[in-house]
Structures are given as C-alpha cells and as structure tokens.
Image (cartoon, rainbow, N blue to C red; front, side, top):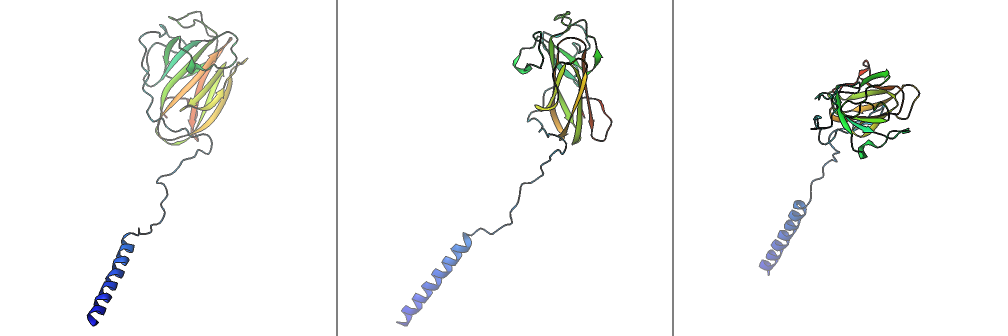
Length: 228
C-alpha cells in the first residue's frame, strides 16, 4: 500500500511539472510596442510630392519630327541637362490649356531652361510650320534632381497660360488667356532624389512669355535648372 501511494505521488508531481513546462514554453515573452522606423516629412509650406519609383529617363531626340532651326522656345539639339518639348497645334479660340497628355505631338524641340521673356513671336517652328505663331501648346518635361531636402518656391511668368507640375502634382497654376504676361508662384517641399518636372504652356494670340523661376527658401531666386 505504501509503495502504491509513493507511485501515485510521483506521477502527480511529474504531471504538474509537465503542465508547468508546457505553459512556460508556449508563452511568448512580452515586448514593448515598436512603431515604424523612420520619419514622415511634411512640407509646412506646400505639398510634398514623393519621388517617382523609377527616375525619369534623360530625354532622347526622336528619329523624326524635331524642328530644323532654333527658335525662342528651343532647338533641335538635345540637352541632357535640359527639357524636351512636345509641340501641339490647338484650335483657334482656345482659352485654357487642353489635356496635352491625351494628344499626339506635332513635333519636338529641346531647351536648357525656360526663360522666354515677354516678346512678339515670329518665324513659327521651322521644319514643321514656320507660319504657326499662335494657337499652339508646348509640354516641357525633364528629370528634376534634388540634392538637398528643403522647402522650395517656384514662380511661373506666362502669356498666355502655363501649369507647372512636379511628380504630377500641380505646384503653380497660371492658366488662361491674358492681355499681358502675369506671374504666379507656389511652394513645395522636395525630398532628395530624382523627381519629374513638367510645364504645360499654350499661346493663343499676341505676345508670348514663359519663364520658370525657383529658389530654396532663404536663397536667391533664379531661372530654374533641372538640378537643385
């Protein structure tokens, strides 16, 4: 009888130890909550476009369709550090920029920067139509390389209308026909990396103008390059 009691006591003790081991082995140790790594940058003075997943490629001259002689809007010489411009003929009476991305370009040109002061435009687009001095639109595109994250200001002088976008986000809207050139500006916070910049412009009739300025907040304004 004593042996039986000792055996039962041994079995009971073993069962308790086994249960205790299973409970401790199956319980994860509690760890303090950890939030996401990094920080979210918010531009206090404007939108914060994110860099595109794939950098915009350097513009390459098309096989055909470029103008054959330089104009105030550009030439047929590719500038790897500049803009590629697509040319569109638009209907007479156009008062606002059409959706150029849904249209087929009538030709191409290239320019280092956008600095066309208010003036009369003559000579059209040699090689395409040298008499087309009005009722046209241009879409300028380029990679925008930002080396320093900061708040930037962009300003567009236009006659007639122009819209500046960075990473498809509108930064300056200076659209619409005008009786004289007008200036509008807009702020943006840019992180370091390669962005895309585009400037859509249209000319109805009369003088032309298209100047794009930019500056890092606190710096001096200048005609905007494609590397900040």
